[in-house]
Image (cartoon, rainbow, N blue to C red; front, side, top):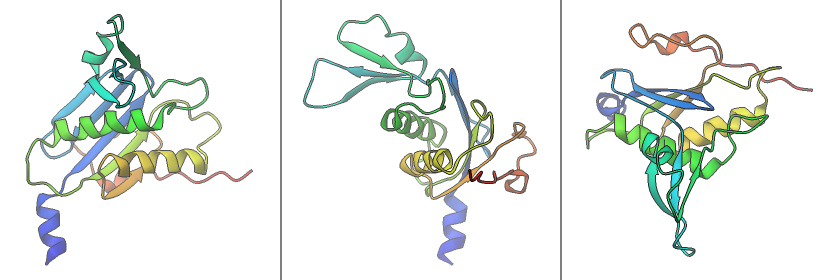
Length: 166
């Protein structure tokens, strides 16, 4: 019974990650957060981290005094460079697409679109899973491959990666 009630208020979120773009889509409502993956931190307060803006608004603050702007999805080898900041961006984006106050933690499909040369390691898989759980997911799936259509989306289409052992 509880499982059925949870399912009524739960949603599926599809997250596509790129170095210069994060797209978070609520599958049922088609509401999408599609912005640059930047986070602006107020550097005036050294004792407390204060987030000033996220996404395109944060990107616009690049030249502001006492504001540090980061892209936690920018690194030469990996897609995630700053875990805590990346997590905050995803938390914000999920809240933006799940505006209703009554919703259970979502099922999240994480889809890294870049920096997959040579396959994906178990460490990278863990990073993506932990990011999604930290952003509020109750269940996480990692999809590797072509982008999934929002209109015909199904959890059955997910291509879970095989872990490469070296």
